[in-house]
Length: 270
Image 1: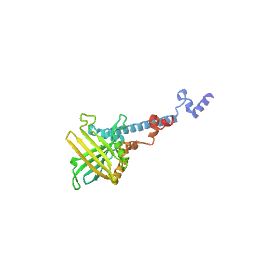
Image 2: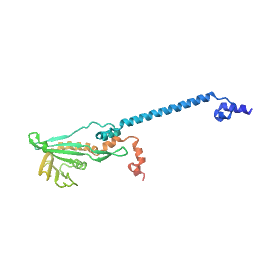
Image 3: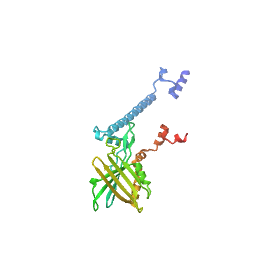
Image 4: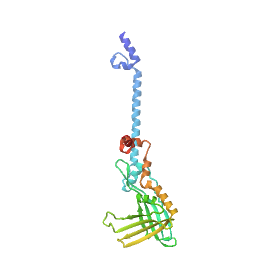
């Protein structure tokens, strides 16, 4: 009687009594089928995992930069931030009777870190190129003089009033053995009638015995165009566009929890 109850319980739930405990019981064909299905499922899962791993390593090998060092940094950047857009050159020129000036932005520079991220290494700037006139609508660009405006100097020009003036001094060899041998001074002064500003660039070089001064009047409308362009390009010169493009919706919370110094919680939770 006990043996029949035991067999009855096994039929209802085979897990209550393993097959090895009954020497006279016959093997259950359904349990073998179930085991076969479980084995097939395990094999199937392992097979899928292997496929995903192979695709991952193929992508890694595909993105590996070539051995040519001239393309190594560019390809590593493309692999990290995607394909780079084509290079574009822009500028704005103002032509007057005595001289011409061209205004061109120069992009900031970044360096790659060991973590795979990028960090700003050098801010961008705006390059001014002055060329003297040699005839009617003719300018000698072989005698051009250049002056690089930093982001702070651009800010000074943006905030300059119609009756205000400013002056910038540059020494291209500052901190080197030739320091003091080249002197560049850019003066921006209001026109007497208040209709604009004079841009006067004076360059003195003891290396080539040069002392040249190029000035050009900039009307109020032309100055407004320059200020509008400066306001637009300033965040790009600081590299903030690259940071904004790298932000993802889930990055903010992760950064705040990983390093509270860079999150708003550090200030508001004091």
